Length: 88
Image (cartoon, rainbow, N blue to C red; front, side, top):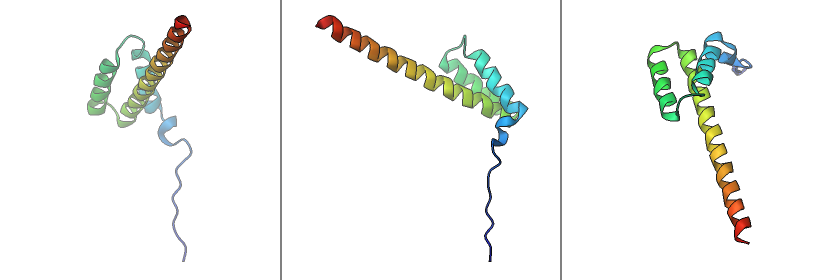
């Protein structure tokens, strides 16, 4: 008796034009909007846009959130290091 094994298609939906369009929209919006505004727009995409476009938008918003958090962490650590150097 054999078992049926399902394997995902490499890349899957990530090569879909709708997904790419959603990521592009979020990329364009991320330059002049706050994270709260991006999250609000993402919610509108989820409600009204094509599913893959919404998924692409939400994925990029998540990446922007992580990028900004990493930058804030690095800047905080750098400022803390600079304060220690000044105190010596």
